[in-house]
Every structure is written in C-alpha cells, then in structure tokens.
Length: 390
Image (cartoon, rainbow, N blue to C red; front, side, top):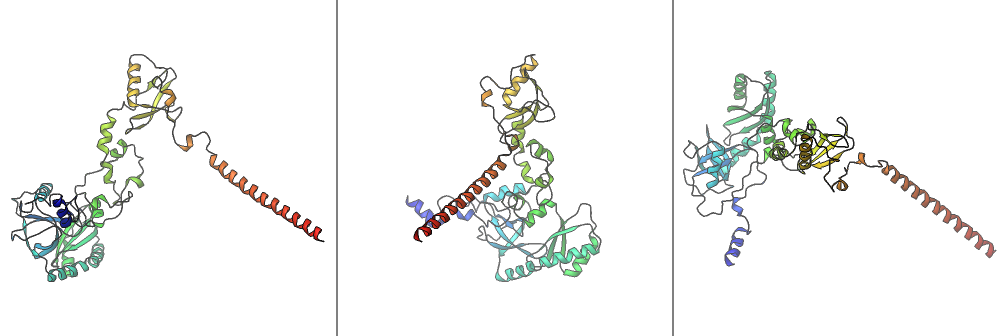
C-alpha cells in the first residue's frame, strides 16, 4: 500500500505513467506506454523527433544526452541544424522504425544538443516568415504559369533551408521556380509533392464527427478509398456527405468495411427471389449488423414490406429449390412479431402534426372565448352592484 502511495506522489496518478504522455495538440501524438518500465530508455540510442505538423524523423543520440519525451533538441540537417521535439524514446522507437521501413543499423543523423535560447530565437524568427513566404511563392508560381498549388512552407530551425509542399495533378517542371525562390528568399529550396489528404493533415481541422481529423492526429498511411466501401455499408452515395475536407472520400469509410464484408457473407444473394403461397418477394434492403433483410412484393417499388432474418431467408430459398413454397415468409409464431418501420411516411396518419396544431388553435380560441365570457359576467356583476347602491 505504501508503494502505491509513493507512486501516486511521484507520478500524480495510479493508472498511467505521465512520462508517456505528450502534447495532445500535436499531430500524430504517440503515447509511450512503456515509459515507466525500468531500463526502457537504455534499450536503444535512437529517438523519434517531430517537427512542424506531421513531419517526423529518427536520430541517433550519439552524445548520450538524457532525453525524455517533450525535450526540444537541435538535430543534424543538411545543411546546418534543425529544431524539433522528442516524441518517443526506448523500445517503441524500434517498432516505429519498422513502420518507416528503417532498421537500427541504418545511417541516421545525430542529435547535437538540447536547444539553447539562441537556437530558439533563430527558430522563432524562421517560423515567423513561413506564412509570408507561402503567399509570395504562390504569386511567383502563378507568374511562371505553373499548374501547382503551394500548400505550406516549412523553414529549417536555423533558417538556412525552406521546404515547399505543393499539390499538382500533373508533372511540373519547377526548375525555374527553384531558381527564382532561391534568389528571392536567399535560402536552400526543397520542393516536396504531397496529396490532398496529406495537405489536410498538415492544415488540420474538425471533421463532421466533431473530432479532430484522422489525418492530423494518427493516420500516416493513406490507403485509397473507393465507393465500394460505401456500397458494402449501404451508405447513400452522396458526394457532399462522403467527401472530407480534402475533397476526397473520407478515410473513415475503410474503418468498418471489413466487418461489413465479413457479415455480408452470411446473407443470401440479393438477386434471389423468395416464393411463397402469398406471392413472390424481392430484395428491398438489408441491415447487415442486425442480420435482417426486408423484402417487397413488388420488384420496383416498396410494397407489402416484410422483414426477416438472413437465416430465415436462406431457409425459404432452400425450400424453393426443393419445389416447396411456405405459406408466409415468417417462421411459425413469428408473424405476430413483425416489425413495423419507424419511417414517418409509412405510418397510418401523416397529418397528425397538422391535427396537433389545429388542437392548439382550438384550445387558444376556447381560452380566449372563456376569458371574454368571464369578462362579460364580471361587467354584469358590477352593473348589478351599482344599481343596488343607487
């Protein structure tokens, strides 16, 4: 018990190690769940360093500096040095290297030192020029008639180099652009092409779900998204709802599609017709997660809709193959449990809201007439009192 109290006093909590937490406002933040394991930091001398937005790099701590998550360091760059924040140390770095297709034996650049006040001053001066540089470079690209969009500019920590992130549908010959930019800004120029999804990740924002964009928080590998993912999930093919802020199909369409594909294997084919003594029924819609299918007695319009389970639909299909026709789609005793749709258009009386408003008007008129009637009685009573007094 005393050990637990000491742990709370030292770490401030009894559940997770605070050393593993990073800045929650930083994109691609990684929680180091091995931070409190003894000897974790001595496993490897490689650290993960994050720069502006989603750019990360891996550097070797050859000087054996006591680095922890959150430290601002000066790292080797070409040319000069860059300023970044340590986001991961220890065993998890080795796992992150696999994602980056690197090995501990790869040639990695070095960590020079922890950032000094002089380094931070140069860093802030360089960052202050990024927005104006981006606006100026866009105008230069327009003057050169280049079909490209410069979405972001990132200065190196020492201000000797600038990375221009651009989007282009076709191949762009920007050799003349590099000469002009180098002459105007007096720095080394690096052009890096990104896609629309990467641009959205660098800019950031809030999605329609109310959370920060996935591409700005944890997504690093952008897998292509097709409309088949929406079809498997029976999502309406509305471009305005399916497209994200990058004008591409939302990445989250791929999150649950595997579960839908697996669940749909338990369903009969949609072109199968179910024959009963009442008539022939055709597929209308399916609720894959509930395992239910709705059939219509008309092939083109919803009519006499009946909802049954996928298991029951397969049973009816097997009976039809043997030349048998059940009396109804429902199993014995299930007809009375037929589920009715909650759609307002399918209810018996769709004018009930109008009736409710009429009832309100009647109540108002009755209240108004009642007040007038009481007012007349009061006036009559006052007249009688006045006549008696006379």
